[in-house]
Length: 271
Image (cartoon, rainbow, N blue to C red; front, side, top):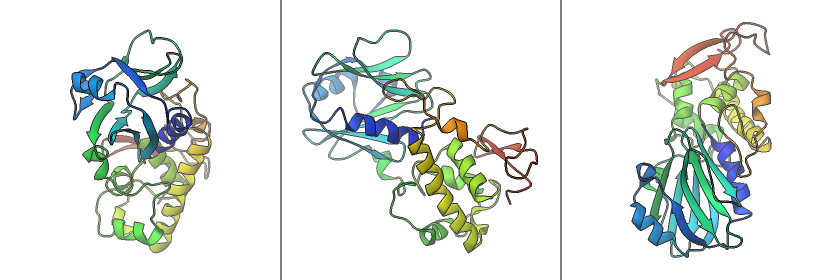
């Protein structure tokens, strides 16, 4: 699933290419994936609108359009957002927006149709407004994190996946963050010492920053707007490595299910 670093990579690329350009027309729409708008309303509302900016909140892309419209895009588990010069062909094209200038297109592919697209007026989709601060660039400190963790009985990984607390961390980066911090994903979130909270806060920023620098993690469907894979998958120390030796202590990593998600960790050096 595209998480914060993957979405930030796409945002940076689109922010360099979309602002100032108009959407000529909506070539294709998938009704099942639309929220807050119908297919007909999407087409009529976007036609001729100029893109003013491309920003991000957590895992969500926000395309601000003239007329105070906001297109909120969530890539779901298998979504890809691509810029293509030709009319898209093949399976899984759910949305296609023709852009002015050379007939290029912004294309949303999604094999499983878990992605969502909202069109709202005056601000992003309501689900975005309910999120916590950005896990990478948000205005929060270790003390703020300690207050969020306090008295919470949920497993630590479940806390990291809760977008109402910190926005942007998903399954892959949660495993890597907890490995980096030396913390078990099964620990009750409210049981951390001040020193452990400090390690966790540093690891959140560090691993997300590394993911952004490496242009995301391509272990499944993720590619950038040009169809290129990221590089973070080459650094994985925990995610998907259950049954293999821990790169820190040599013990065997194990697998557990936390918040419905497969979780890999070292029972020897993650406490």
